[in-house]
Image 1 (cartoon, rainbow, N blue to C red):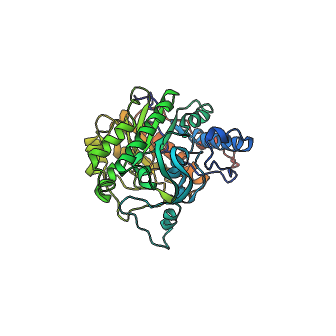
Image 2 (image 1 turned 180 degrees about the vertical axis):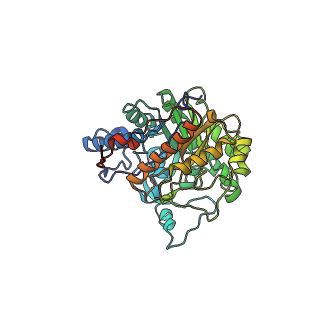
Image 3 (image 1 turned 120 degrees about the vertical axis):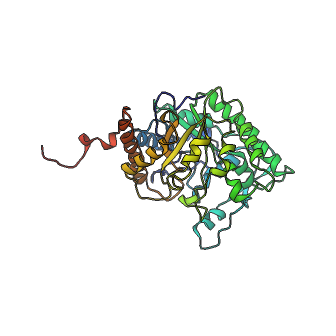
Length: 393
């Protein structure tokens, strides 16, 4: 169901995370979100952080906002994106332990920054049936949505990455473990949608990774991964707008592949997902796949990334406009959404850099909107009336 992106041609958004404020030092740990929100200091810091994330997006002029992934703790490599779920779901041990990442093509030696990312994989292990536990996504979304009139998107990691991250003493097979995660997440996401969340974002299916990494667990091919995705989102189509976020990895704002990868081998598979919107990295990975994306993704909206989350260099509006024009050669404006390639809060980027990247994204989109005769978005950050520079009258 097109809900969050309805009514605006070429709306702007970000994938999710934003750099954590330096003063936001409260941590959630293994406490449930609702339990933590009883603590006055945690509640004040959390709500202030979400408010600052939303305000930065509003000042830039984004159409669809996020809560900046404020519930994640500040962990090496942005590891909380993966560790939050097992620390709060049913079926896990209380004590965490070092865990092996069971995906292909992951081998970083000591001395590489991403070796720290591997050492930060300290998760509880599966000891019983996996259940929703205290994920409490709906409560987190409500905190953000009640602070803004703009639609707030909420994202979650997908089952196959969770299944690859944890040790398991309960399930006999990683596929069985993956499906248990899928069922638990499905129940949680339906509650989130029932609460009114206008956009639910599914983050990092491994479908596009199969050509470079091989089958998940050596067993799950593209068709089976499509089935897992569709099982995880079953029931959402009538309630909310479903985004599928595909990227090439983002721990510590680092690239995880030496060579630039292509989406083209799996575009037809991505088209089979029960999603309304598919996201693509087209800034850091380049625009080379745009023609193929336009030819093969016909019935869904397409998000193009115009901001590189790996670099502190703020993109110029005219360069963003050029990338949007290239996309419009193959994707009509009514099916195009403008965003960042991935999250900007996975360790390494400052708040000011992220804010100006969002501003530049809106200004670049406005260039193209004016060329098409569309109304530009208001961007308070670029309004000359509010410049502190002294100018001659």
